[in-house]
Amino acid sequence: MVTPDQIAHLNNVPGMDYTIGAMPGEDRTLLYGYTTERKTWHVYQQDGLLHKVIYIGSNPDFEFTEVAEKIDARHLVPNKRLYPEACDFIFCWELKRRDVDLPFTNFGGTKVDPNKLFHGRIM
Image (cartoon, rainbow, N blue to C red; front, side):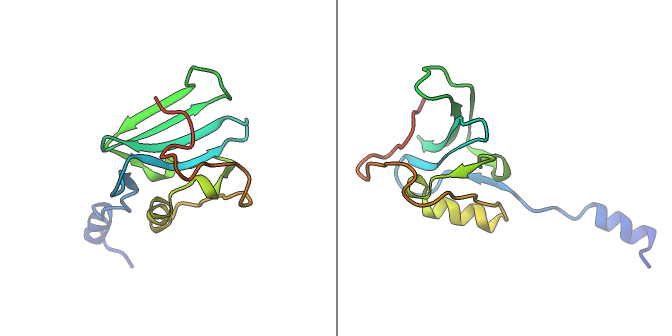
């Protein structure tokens, strides 16, 4: 049996902290993938901030942008697939620690230049 006092304590228990910020190291792509609508999904860090941008092909306009020191990790993964070869291992590790599912497609689904820091368009 849970008492009224215990209910009050339960109501004050903090939940899981899902926020995530920039990773150690240089500016770079953290996640790169696409949505069910075939929109490009790019999460990257630059100047200590996380950037999430969504766009269609080579269209110069971004359909959605978010820039912050920390973002809720549950909102950083596209609803379709991630290209594993264009994602950052440490960032993915930290997402998994926050119980965020990572829907990777088969390796080799996109071509990346290992010498480039960013695999998609940036603002």
